[in-house]
Length: 556
Image 1 (tube, rainbow, N blue to C red):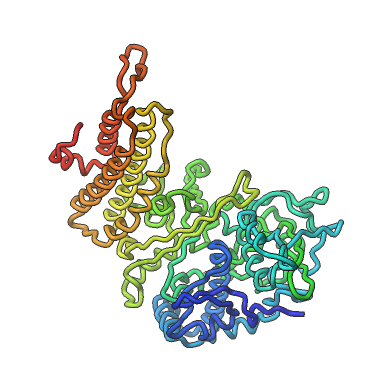
Image 2 (cartoon, helix red, strand yellow; image 1 turned 180 degrees about the vertical axis):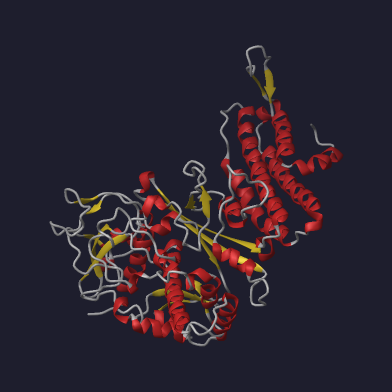
């Protein structure tokens, strides 16, 4: 029995008109996904699953074109020329014969149910006691409701198409913790596989430059090091010898990645799917390849920012780790890791700039190509784990549009302005949340910061902020700062006015509070005093508006 990912539809694709359908790997690359109603993206069971599947498509695309470039060693490789040609092919709707030929070469390895080399699995994986788990094991806890709406035999089982998608997700994002101890893995103790960490992609901040079609997206996220590297060592999982129950190098404590395709298809787990001929009914999941040193200086992934670790860096040896995106206020907190470059103002030897995703830097470097968009439509995907990374707690998915000009090396002052004003915006919004909490105090209640006004305001400011970015002029940066901070101040005060209209009479009158210090005097906490405190905090957060405030006659 077979289920070929090359021929059988399993990838959930969405077309330009909003319709969805399943497609095979062949259909993605043979032109069936293109035309007037082209496939624009993936829309599977979760954003994290879509990112994992996209990374699989990218690994196929990278390796196919890398192999083709090696065949044509007579011609000099120039990445901008390759990019231009690949873009034209992607937008023409023509079949990518390079990828199709490559898939045929590895056809056997893309069979989900192959008796000897099943896709991303170990055919004879087993434990001493023959342990198996329900198919739901490879669907994260956060997706339990995935099964609750089902009935009959579909409950707790997966179709082959679903199983393929969740298998890829498992290799990318599986949580840490004790696993089933597979026979043949020398790391097993007492029948258990002890924690080796999450899947590689789970430690990253997935950054996708989204094109107008799926084929364009593949090109936009292909950097030169995805195609060419000095050692020519990068290999996807299916290009290597099939895995066994043991780690790739059983004698080693960890395995070092060989390049972008290796990381995009990193086999963090050894998996075996069991089926009844129609559906996947059970699974076995054990430990696979361990990323060394918790990911320190594993820098081969072009689709994640990296953070500098001052604690781990010693004696001139800098250490960086892949940086996931924050679960709250994602857009605002992601600007620094997406924008900053080494040498930008605001960073020091002790507080070094993060390293932005290389796919973004590439856009700035390819500025002379007419096909490069003026705006980068960026999708961000991360997974947040629970305590000890032993469960998946939350999937982070957000988008932002950034002008490509802001990514260029010479735009250092503009980037600093953007980052400073983003931080100022967050500080002003936090002041609004504090104001809401202090109104409760004035009414006789207990003070508690109110996150809802803060988060609502920040969400509403995302689009205006993007529009503000579009108009940045290097010669008028101070004017731009005043303009934006003035706008933010106005929005905060407008929201504060709404909150004031809803307060009780008690808050307007206020209540006496105990002295703040031993020698102090009692004071009245009322809506008016709380408002004055908000003005002061806005002065601190939005310094470019202080002069305008005085003209307007706001209270000090």
